[in-house]
Each structure stands twice: as structure tokens, then as C-alpha cells.
Length: 273
Length: 299
Image 1 (tube, helix red, strand yellow):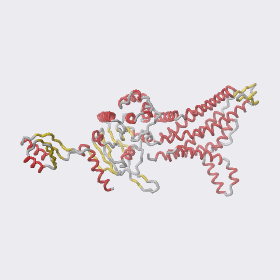
Image 2 (tube, rainbow over the protein chains, first blue to last red; image 1 turned 60 degrees about the vertical axis):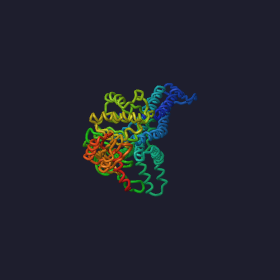
Image 3 (cartoon, chains in turn yellow, cyan; image 1 turned 135 degrees about the vertical axis):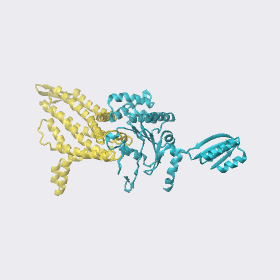
Image 4 (tube, chains in turn brown, orange; image 1 turned 30 degrees about the vertical axis):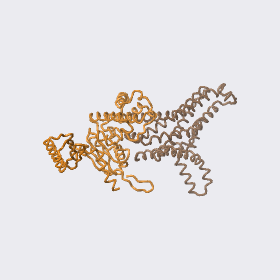
């Protein structure tokens, strides 16, 4: 436990030193301040009389719909833009661990390699999760106080965002262990972030493809790779209080993440430094 | 065994080396660049995995994390996290070594003082440390959990002579406390001063090992006499292995103690003064060069 705590705190310290944490924190705070002071929702008898953003009135009637849609937009910004930034930031944090002269010192300690890598992984997840939770929890409270809408969907959506970050971080870890390069880790993760939304359109793609074997390839890729786009749909439905049709995108993505992280740990265990 | 890039040629970095290091002793590992010293040390610490065989320390396979608990290590080209202060770094590596917070809080200031880091440096970021200060804090890091074995790779690299002396004093006091010190260094004079035993590695194989005393043991005796009469000088020259005369002084080299004693008797019997008398010692550098050179020539 001492070693785990030390590894997590070290990741935080490095994130602070690299200004990564403060960068995220600043962006989140700016958004929260925007919600707190710039956006005004006047609620009259359970409905929004007006929603004022930067002084402009937007007449509206359904306060819950307004809140959920705004939360949905925040969640999507966080999910796609925030995720991209997190990938950029985390790739450096992971590959820094493998620097010559640093890794030898870590490996010489009475801590298993799996423990070392998972400690760094957990620290990285917590750095990003702290900011996601800060933004989501902060905006959830602001919306709650301003409108009286306290739906749990928005909070659940933050867990989905953190979950997807865990999966992408597993890719970063594997690429980092294999190539010691933050740049390659970013490229590999971005490739997944770009390819998987395309694969999410597999029904349309399959219709366009001529041969059955090509369709099989698309199907295999779709079911094997993480379903970033499909999970974003789940997040949206959670926020809108709509039923989630299938949790398959979540559990199949979790399997992908577990396998990739397992490969990263296995490779780290057998590698010589 | 490493496989080289596209050629796929295998390189045997370390080949069947087994060293017995007595507990509580100071042991030096020597060898030219690329001899396999660092790879050997990394194997001991399980940073590098051998393709065959095992690295055992205190009777345990170092792949087991617990086997590394009694080991303190200072790598050669260390890269300590520059965002940490000296105190933070010791706290971090102390925690990784399994020390609890109370023990770390007590040990850290003791160690920083021991290695000679001033109070103001304790809370200074490592990015602002000089090379010498980094070596000192690196040594403190290796000592944080009071290890029984200290593996040091070029510990005085970049340290000024005063600092070097200080580090040597610290290591000597540790040796007296029964800590085994395994020193990997290019500074032969330092190894000779400090280590009781050494091993020389060449091309991944053990080329020579033994106590420093044995390896640098005398290869003869030197006598310097003054005002030696010509007849005696001729006689002594005939007996000596080599000689040199200069401004009334005669320097003679003898191969054995008996020959040297006989020469002393003769000199004294003839009323000559003896300016100096001593055993000729090889330096560790001589031993090192003699061990390495034949192989270098064959290359």
C-alpha cells in the first residue's frame, strides 16, 4: 500500500510539475465559472421561463430538457476534446517512467514490475478522473442549485468517460512499454479514436462492401476494438434519462482494455532495461 | 545475450560470471567500456533478464521483489525526477522500499546530513542541484532503507575531490557497520584505495579476481644507497635485477627478500647509508592494463 500510494502521489507530482493538472483544472474552472455567472436560468413553477447566455434570452419551457441538453453538451466536450487532451498529457507521463536512469532505480526496489506499472497507471487515471469529477460534479451542483434538476445521469456519464480514458490509457501503456515513445503512444491511441467511430457505422459500411470476407473484417474490427462512439451514445442516453438499449459496447470495450493492459504488463515484466 | 538490429547477430554481454562477495566487504568491479559491468549489475538487480542462469543475492533470486529489499542501488547515469526536492525523492524511494512515514521522517534528515547536503538543499528541487549534489542525494537514496548490500555505479562521478573524500568516508563507515559494498567504477585509484577485493571483466567474462593486496603484491624490492664505493657498486649491480646511479646515489632493484637483505648487509658493512628501502608494488592500474591489454591486442 505504501508503494502504491507513493507511485500515485509521484504521478500527481509530475502532473503538477508538467502543468498538466493545472491546465485541466484551469479549463474546468473556466467552464464552471461560465455556468455559474454567465448562464442564467429563470425557473417559474418548474419550467424555465428564460435561459440567458451572455445576456441573450432563449425562451424555453422545459427546464429539465434544457439542463439535460446542456449537460449532454458538456459531457460530449469532455468525452471527445477532454479525452484527446488527456491522451496527449498522459502519453508523456507514462513514457517518462521508462527513461534510462529512472527505470533502473524503480526496478531495483522491492516492488514487482506489475505493481510499478499499475501504480503509475492508477496515478494517471486519478489525475484525469479528479479533473473530470471536478467539472462534472461542479456543474451538476450549479445546475442543481439554479434549476432544482438533480438527475444522476450526468454523474454516471462521468464514470463512462473515466472508463473510456482507462481503456485508452491501456493502449498508451502498451505502446509506451513497446516503443518508449510518447509520440507513438499518442499516434496509436489517436488511430483508435479515429477508426472506431468509423467502424461504429459498420451497418452502412457492410452494405457498401462487395465481398463477405471484407464484411467479416469490418465485423471483427468492430467487435474487437473499443466502441468509443457507441459509448458516447450511452452517455447521452444516460444524461437524457433514456433507457440504454445495450451495454455490449461497454463490456466489449472493457475486455479490449483488459487484454491490452495485460499485454502491456506482460511485455513490461519480460523486458530488459 | 542481445540480438543486434537488422543483422540479428547475437552479442553475449555477460557470459557465465559468478562472484563470491564476502559479507561486509568492499568489492570493486572493473573493466573497460562495453565489458559488461553495467549489464552484470543490472542483472543483479533484475533490471535486465539473463537469457540463461539466475542472479542470486543473499541466496535469493533477484527476480523476486523481496530479494531486492536488502539492496541499495545508485545507477551510473541516473535521472532523478527534477520536479522533486531532495527530501521528496528520499521520501518516494523510501516508501517504495517499504518504509513507513515515521521511519522516513526520521531517516531523511539524518541521511541528507550524512552525505553532506546543506539544510537549504533539502527542499530545493533536484533540477537545481549540481552534479556533485545529485551524486550525494543519490547515495542517500541508496541508503534510505539501511541496506545490507550497496551497489554503486560510479558513485563519485562528477564530484569534486573534497566531495569524493567525503563519499569515501561515508562508505568506509558503512563498511565498518557491516554493509557489503559493491563498487563499479572507472577510477582505478579510488577502487584501489577503497576496495578489499576486485574483479576485472573483459568481453563479458571474468578475466581476473582477487584481493587488492594479492593483485598488487610486490614484484621486488627497491634499495637506494648513498656513497657506495665503486667495488661494491660493481658487485651489487651484478646481483641486482636492475639498477640506476645518479649523483652519488645508487638505486637497486632485487627480485627476492633474501637478495635485498644481503644487499643491505653489504651496504651497511661498507659504511654506506641507506636512503630508502621498500617493497615494489604494482598499482591496480598496472594489473588492470596487464589483464586487459593482451585481449585488446588480440582483437
